[in-house]
Length: 173
Image (cartoon, rainbow, N blue to C red):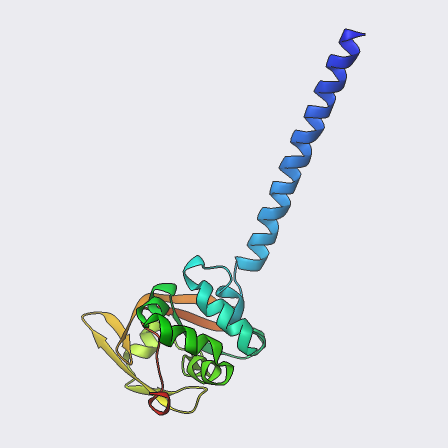
């Protein structure tokens, strides 16, 4: 009787381990497919430093736009960039969908530009309609005063460059 109980426990534990390892493998496969080479929009979901941007893109509906076919460059402000904005101003921006969408569109170029492509440009027109000013200081790409901290995250429909400041279009200042 005792040996049957021990055998049952061993079988139950073995099944639990197999089941757990299968779940882990499934989770890894899902993460790899979702975050292996994502679209421009889904790349924000795969980077913990871009959670504020990700939620803003979802809120304004721009996730759909940046997930579609096409070729985009996203200057992606990090969470630290959003935190540079005074709290009351940041909360007001994130609460105003129209202004938020305008600001986010100012971070998007309707064509893919790698860091080396940007280095030879002085300005480019954004989805918002205004131009961002480009510069390269000591090998670091600068976009409207923001430093590119992570360049060339290649995506299925473009490229993402993480920046250290939220860009505000002139009309939005």
